[in-house]
Length: 166
Image (tube, rainbow, N blue to C red; front, side, top):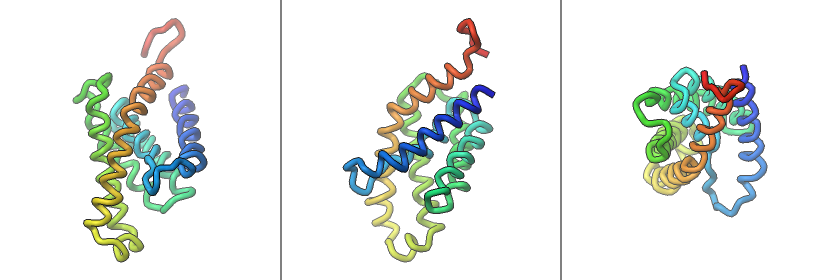
């Protein structure tokens, strides 16, 4: 229960940051997708079931102010990222940014294909080289610092009184 409340608070903080702070940063059209990074990292840390649930919650929150397809894309990303749990060393900071980059490419391509305003107004090559790949690089860069933070928070939420983990 403590972990669910903790993840909920983190998602609330991510929502506030994504909506209010990131649009004001001078990054041009590039903004990190904190919801994608969180769903991907939680999947890597806790497995596909937690990744699926956190991806659903992240996609739902993002769709409250966004495009409308995140509720389908983010759970898939969380689930697929969770399939790597147990296959990579969780304390490593090398693999999570690579997986976040791949998840960003997957998300960008699916978003391009399902939104007709992108599909009919942008060529795939332009979308890939000018939007999707740079967005994946930004997400991977943020994951370099975001993954260790989420990993630390997850360990703190699992910690029982007395410093013993479940």
